[in-house]
Image (cartoon, rainbow, N blue to C red):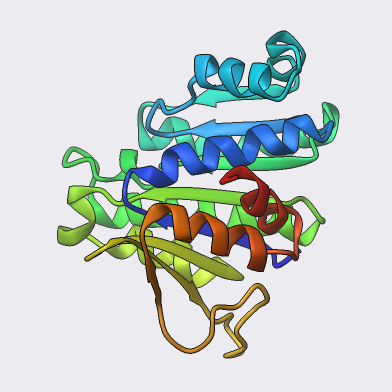
Length: 222
């Protein structure tokens, strides 16, 4: 496990993150889903479960969804309630989607929002230190271009950053080295991979082999 894994990029990462979570559920895991953009889609989970020949009810019973609509709610959820929930369920992993979205709030002073978000990130890092796999799915937001500090804080905390960006012929997947300068396996060499989505899926399947979420990503896109 590479620690906190950040999957960021175009809106496709939302569907990819959900599919990764479903693969983990199919393997018998229980997950805590922290949602800052109201992205959890139970109907998509049901469709994927049926495609795998499994009961949607069985899978949905093992994912515990908590939504936050303000930055203060999200802070209270991650820092206050999430550690207890992970311990008591117990949960085998955490998926956090759109963490920065609620912090782009003009009614909350920047200094306050930044301090709260830093505590959110530290809360996730504490879970990782306890051996809990954490996947953060961060779709690009228009606000990120004006105020990038929240996306940057996630990137600094991540052991691995997977970025899915537009490319001339489809999508480009970039894997950022870890904080010690090492390119984590799975690695794609020294330059971005550019391909149509079908080729990208094939390369993900063949090359992403290590770590809980990396393995989930390898199977999810198949």
